[in-house]
Image 1: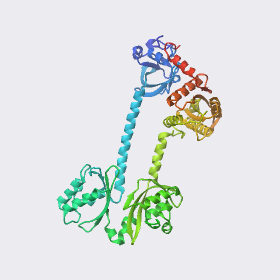
Image 2: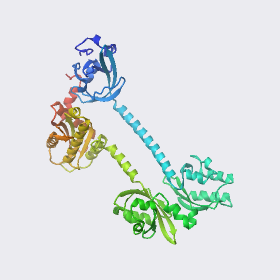
Image 3: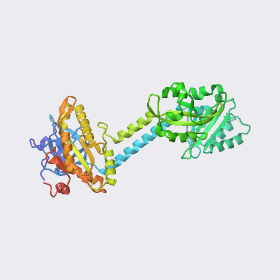
Length: 558
């Protein structure tokens, strides 16, 4: 194999000593001038690229992308070996100056799939940890926003979190509160101070009663304080054995004239009062009137079920008919305002007696923005942000799903890989804004052409993929149809752009074919189409893989 250590226009003396010594390195190394022309390639690079004629070639025709950064930069790229499939690599750049001449060197190392998997796993773990921390902060913020005193306990009845109102309600034990502290120890400490707020003649009997109430799956009781206030204790066991405890000052409820102002009318959470039988609304607070857009008289003419979407009314009715002492519903319900806006809510329901009749107090927590944000995040995780198409991750999952499901006799699955030809000059001539518009127009044409029953994805850059299920259409016909479709000019921001496309097609008639195998076949066919002159299609056949294998074998490679 010939030595590749110097520029044909110069001598070895024109190169830095580090590059001359690099001939002995087992890592592939190349060096280019400022124009990206290869001046040097060591033997390891010749082997990696599968060709001895590297000198004088442009690096960006062999390495995609060739994006040289500052000295010490590391970037991911793909090399295009002669007669072999693309190889993912990492480039480490270094720069030298030889007189007035600047030389850019790059060490090329192939990327380990296991290393990528480990890095991806670590990245997922970091994101999961960050998400958990964010959820904890949101939970604490939510607890602080609630107008009631809140405390949360684990399955061992130890404190997990509490809000400021809870600490203010029990100032004698507030300094002792801490995550992991047993609830019973806090109660004993409160008794020991001699300043416990609860009114009782027998503290020990009261302690036993309080812990018995705390141990129930659900409890509600009222406790009078020494200063005359009344506090209601609402406690409920959670699915994991923990407890959520709410302490509500009901002093003004005991004084009827101020009850609605404190816990109903002035509450920032939309709330309504309704008959327990029939759900007719007889009162709504200001927040509910504002959020739902009904004036108070119109609100009172509705039932609770009128707020829900028709499809959910039967389920909501069953839930409202059996609240017991009350329930905090974890389900997100869909309701509609007077203006027709759909809102997502969590409902908190309490049974009570109001003016001698059984009633339901319903709090309606608007979580529309939260649901919308979560849906948007989920969409972004599965779709390309520029085109809205499925991304590589979602595409792989859909391919596995489609290949694994039963198919009628004679039905085949076509996997088409599309690589736009002549797209880079579009960015160079018209700018990336026009290039992005062209990619969006390509996505729209493909989506409209194949219909909603098929899958269109953007795999990255100017690479697209289509999954078609066909009964009788030959793969050649489908490929030719898409090639003709994308060969038509695009009108993008007053620019008329014409590009081509190379298409590789793989056909799956066997339900049990491996998705990764089918993708390799489509990629092989695409490579063959591009090698044959671009702007054409090629359907995979087994002999292509054999030819590719022979071309990548050093014993048979030219």
